[in-house]
Length: 395
Image (cartoon, rainbow, N blue to C red):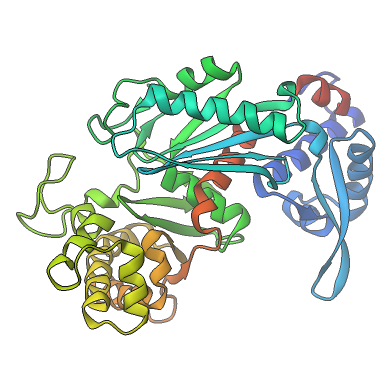
């Protein structure tokens, strides 16, 4: 945000700095009450009230009345007038595109299946066309689109704008993802791994809101984790932090797409689970397996418990290293609920340094399949500058 337009130390520069602090916190943490803003910024309630009223007058924020702990409070959020962003999630089998406003509200949503070996050029074209169609259908102008947040089901290196590990997602190697999407749309684009974005989504809008540390485990056709600590996502040196799917859990196990053997992803992905039941229950989907387990099928319950055991091996190492307060389980396998989480808790307790007073809490995702795309919207608003004219007016 613009600074130093006026002499440092002046009343105007102080007001501008306080205004910038408030806007930055609302952008990062979402809608907050004026009392919460005072706590987060250290400013007095009177100062918060004055600055919020100024920002409302400029159309930068809006307010609404809410109830917290039985008391009425004024909630502050960024204004829809600032513009909108698109969130894109490329999972291994599905493309999801949404339009979101600055408050994190989803105003339009589309989903389409993808072939097993989907290629970057076709997929990025699809996503771009969907965004323009959705803008038109929702009555928004193309000029209102500030930018795009994009989630990809593979580790991503922002320094090179390419996949961090070649070979993990066929058809995407050496593609500069953000640049390619930006050329199609003429808008700024930011990219991250989908597990990271799912963790960001849960920390802003879901079960992890307010947690100081958390891990999101995304379990579907692949498996990965997003790590949240000290208010930010831990991405690592080259974007591969949280890749628990490639931790070896079985010595000399099946060959993984990463080139190693016995990786967690080979033991726990949806194909591995359903294939292990082919001789006993025939051709089924993961959803069928979960449904039968809920109905009491012993074999289906056992393979889910086995998956929980292997996930626990990988998460135990993460628990010992990161010590999260919360572990959020998302993805297709999360639909198993307690059939998965109960044996997972046992596996983590047995294989990590157990703290009986403060063990990590295990919860199911509140945002379900929306977690990554909601995180993509938040990531875009965090990363893409607000319109210059709006910021200059607020100074």
